Image (cartoon, rainbow, N blue to C red):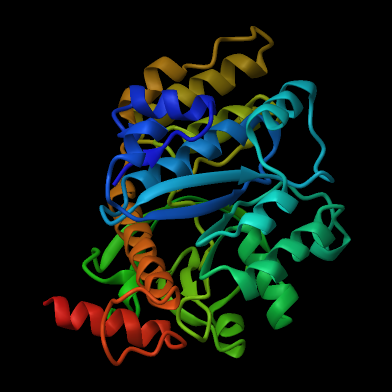
Length: 355
């Protein structure tokens, strides 16, 4: 079912224009469909703040027809913000204190920019850990994206990410490694995911922590994993939420900052031969000091999105798991003989009975 526009966040109108179904609160109130309340701890820097909202809202809103989704964005006060972002947050975001009082069914934690070699030295570390700790005891499931995955692996499991000699950057092919898990039910066994990171938590580190790996790439490493209980924490190392143009935006930013721009590698499996030629010409002209216009308009039609459908499938499965567990835990009639303390058993039995 759709997202519910329970506040005036501009993201809702942008999603409507993109074809995503968004209900006004009065319409949602007239439908006999259960609500799910999903928090979004958005730690992304100002330039990506609103795009990240749209990306995760879209994934949730298009994911699963079983509930009406109320999204609750919030951030951390220790993150540096410019005037425009501060105004956006003040107008449309909630405080963690308010979210903690009202409660959530599920939580998504985004990545963030870092400046320290050790995550524990970042200014946002302690308030982020406070959110992660609270969610462990009070939220059915938390989905961690990229840096949030690294933070939980370090904080809860003592597994510290390792900086790689080269940036893991591009669109990488992955395979499902355990098709029995409900998070990967009915998705492609081979699928693409964008990555954009310098650091990695390896399969060996996930396994040493008892964390189950569900999908990985021979080039980019583990993408999808889940905590030992099967649901409480879901880990993404990649960025399945990315828009088609997200890696292009990153390349443009980096190309305009790197000297010479020609030394910047292309994201893996993202630009075709013609797009690479356009960018090589742009870098050559930039190096000569002519300040050419970045050829974005010529590049966008050449980009393909090969990951969004699978991302919807995984997030839809995650929402379905959350729905079933919260339904049972709140004493609502669901299925006799199900142990709500065993979410994987609950989900697996529901899936088996439904078929």
